[in-house]
Length: 167
Image 1 (cartoon, rainbow, N blue to C red):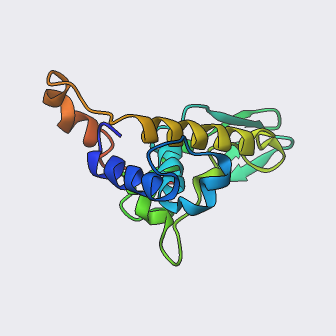
Image 2 (cartoon, one colour):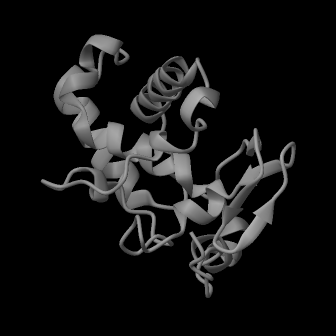
């Protein structure tokens, strides 16, 4: 929110429209806050925190690479979140991508794992993040300090580089 004040202002306006200034948001308010939901969704792939790994159950070949049985394969979640195959302008923090008539890939499809290795607490985690974001955003205006503003360009552009689209 400190990096993107316009996003914060829009989320706060949505919260105040739904709950007003006298109480904190509750889970019952979530349906009326699609922009805040989109902000939370946008944070998930922005900097994935947990690597997802699988073990090959049998020998396999993927894109010409032989993967022996028992090999631990680490999924490139960060790379998926930066792929133009899944996201238009993937390096831009853009919550609006999830509000389109045909939204871009929901990051919950990959940031919490895949298939039978999907995190069983993924919905609990998402709800915990949402209520925390709703409570903090409704209560505070987050700002960078004067000393931090010198590094703003580095923070905003830290993902703007050539990406080899191998996914």
